[in-house]
Amino acid sequence: MTNTQLQTTVCKQKNHIIVKLRKVIRLKLKKISAVAGSIAALTLGLGVMAPAHASGAQEITVWAMCSETGEIAAAREQVAAFNGYYEGDYHATLTCKADMGTAVKSTSVDQLPSVFEFDGENLAAYVYAGKLKQLDGLVPASVFSNELVSIQAEGTYKDGHKYSVSQYDSGLGLYGSKKKLAAAGIKDVPTTWSKAWTASRFTQVLSALAAKAPGKKALDIKENYGMGPGWPGYAFTPIVNSAGYQIVTNGKAVGSLDNAKVVSAFKTFASWKKYVDPSADDKAFENGRVGLAWVGHWQYPAFSKALGKDLVVLPLPNFGAGTKSGQGSHSWGIGKNSAGTELAAANVFLQYIMQDKWILNVTDQNGAVPATKTALNKSVNYRKGGALQLYADQLAASCGTATPTAKCVTVPRTISAAWPVINTAFGTAMQTIWNGGDAKTALHTAAVTIDQDNTDHSGY
Image (cartoon, rainbow, N blue to C red):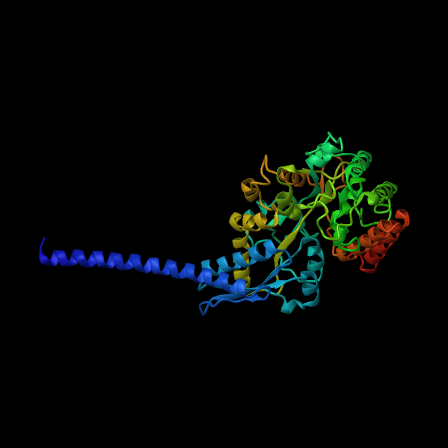
């Protein structure tokens, strides 16, 4: 080899090494940027997350619902990762909202963020108010088709268009202590929705559990969450559905919510109050004061930690038309006024957080049901044989908006712009009944209120 050839070869090798070093340096800097974003998020608590970013990157604002520890962490992590991955192209600034409902309601359309998370039950109200951007033709169809059927329904308005995507769905049922049930002589413990206890059998179960409990209590229904507007709209509408009705049928609540079968079901429910621990400390079940808890997926991490292998998941009692449960949870949408490059960036953000990696990141922390088919199949808890498979099975048997029958389980909260009014009216009736008021009168009053609101708004 001549000196010239040798020098040429050496130069090529040096250039190759330099190129490789540059790639490594860029990768390291990208990782450092992502870490810096995470640190900034942690130090800023519930405030705004705004790590340094390259000039020229398209900025988007993101509002997240930050009331649960695991969800707060997941929101920060996915935003930090997004900023790291798209450094120089897009940058998201995260703001946590403890009360998203009030925040969205009180914010004018032109002041809404690029992207925001919200309770899916309010989708119709936000679309009606002109606060959400239609996602059809923006977010790829493959993202929607990968969502669970229940989530696809939740994100669809009455005009047939889609306005949200969701990372997780919800599960509602009973948690039980195997040891306490066995000690009370309860052998017919149902672990599939088709074998749910009837309401009358459930009364017997509560009586048997209470007889063995030092405090003579058997059930935690999370009364501490509040028995007025709010919690009942999710937790106790399955009683209406299990009696064979929706809160509103064919645009009318009168004749549906106040139907004789529904009234009878709530009278039975109210009769269980003597067995209910108010759970002022929110730990009636974990601390062993009761053998059953009527609550959702979010309690699984705490219950599993407290009871371990003693924990069992059961369906809610059957009031006549089969066991029923809720469906739907937090959703993500784009502000109606997002446009141009901001809209493009918002779209990229939604697609980014809908990857299985980020869905599983949040569901592993909050215990929720992964909202996509692919993520669900990867979930240790929700796939076949998992500790929470019952919740996945229930969602797979969604009733949709049809009349609830024994062949289906989960029912969405009324998909209507009137939901805030419906939720308040139903919650008020629930509070009255729980406090000893007449079930028929309370439910009829709620039904009349709902129908009058519908008339006042010309059917929305």
